[in-house]
Amino acid sequence: MARKGGAAGAASPEAARASVGPVRRRQVFYIPGFDPFPIRRYRELYRSESAAQARISGHDIVMEGVPGAPGRWRTFWRERAAGDAPVTRSDFVVLEWSDIVRRRMAGGVLAGYRALLTTLWRYVASGTFFRLLDLRRGPILAALYPIVMLVAQFLLAVLVAFGLFLGGRWAIGALAAAAGAAPPDLPAAGLALVAALAGAAGLLRWFWKHDGRFYAHYLMHDYAHSCSAAGRYPADLDRRIDAFADAIGRALAAPDVDEVLVVGHSSGAHLAISAVARLLRQGRVPGSGARLALLTLGHVVPMISFLPEARQLRADLALLARADRIFWLDVTAPGDVCTFALCDPVAVSGMAPPGGQIWPRVISAAFSLTLAPERWRKLKWRFFRLHFQYLCAFDRPRGYDYFAITAGPETLADRFAGRPSSPSRIATPRLPVADASADAKESADGAGVAAPARGTGAAAPTIADPTITIRAAARAGAPARRFGGRA
Image 1 (cartoon, rainbow, N blue to C red):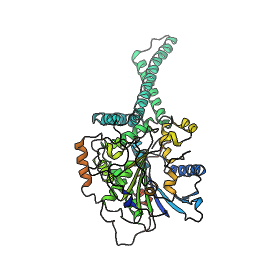
Image 2: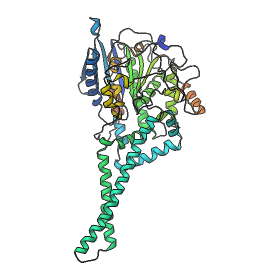
Image 3: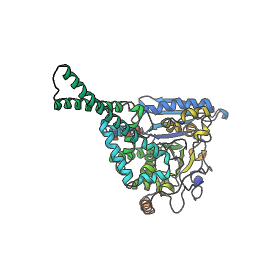
Image 4: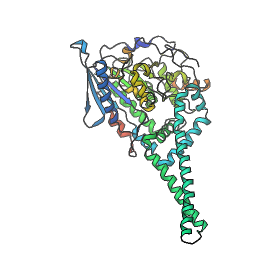
């Protein structure tokens, strides 16, 4: 497997994103992964983990919620060693799509098995499964887990049904014998069959109701969602990405913001990529003023970009790869089997532009080095918990500190200026060249990367509540069940 390190052959883009000095105010947009949980879980996760990182690293960080807005909070950061240095304020907004997730997960037991069959067919028949397996085996083996678990649950239900059928026939015969009568074969078999089917259905429903222990149905719906339209964004999700882009664009137009930071985690990483690409095409990323930065964490981009109809995502990747008005950092970790660790999402998707790729800067969170040995031993087999480690405190942070990035006084571009991609970066394309070339051409048509920001010359608005726009675009979803696991 060919691996390449360092930047991808283009001049350093830092000059285009020159330092604005210490950040006084930052707007952070967080896009979660495939997660049916209420968005307040991310606020509480940030509260607990930022406090833990502050104790470890000596951060002076204060967090407060926004009344009536569970997906919003703000932080205030002061450099302790800097005396009277100004406070950095960061405002956080979770860009919500959990209602779409809940709709995808509706349907009960049968929906999970229908998702199994359709997902397996789409990935195998298109050849995507084998390209993904050649890229990184860890996440693909993890993707097989829900398939194996659902099949095991089904086979167990079949065994239970068979046992109940035989036991029912025997019980009916025994009762008839005790009464001195011969049991009629057909009614006895019918009663035993009803008992068997009821037992099997009850067991499968029990597994479904307790999926918070197994994650089988949840993960199966996650993968099914990724390939539901063979790589195209479903209409409701496409509209939501538009709403995300509009919220980010309004923040970029605010006069008092130094940095707008878009964070996408897991399945939210490719949504963040597409939202930023839409802003670039619309000419809404200014050449001066607020800096736009993109931070992708634990991405699963190849699960979608390798699908045959993922032309829009591939075009978005090609556009961002050469955009000079953003800074894009991608963070993964080999210890996280739920991500394509150190895989450059642009390059492996075959979308590196011929003139030289600028983004993303690919680095490792190196869990085995940044977590204390005893903590690493406890977490290394808790795969879903590790997938969230990017959002949590590290015992020995080595450059990557989620809380310093999202709340501290440096922009993402300043913090990682001059740092090359990991030497273990994987950049060998896994898609046919013809497909990649067509999608790259699509990204160039009407991209408008260097277009002036929309609204130039008009009074810049202050940041409106982006949650209002997103909630207005959302339809009512099914109630969330209790779940745990990765997003």
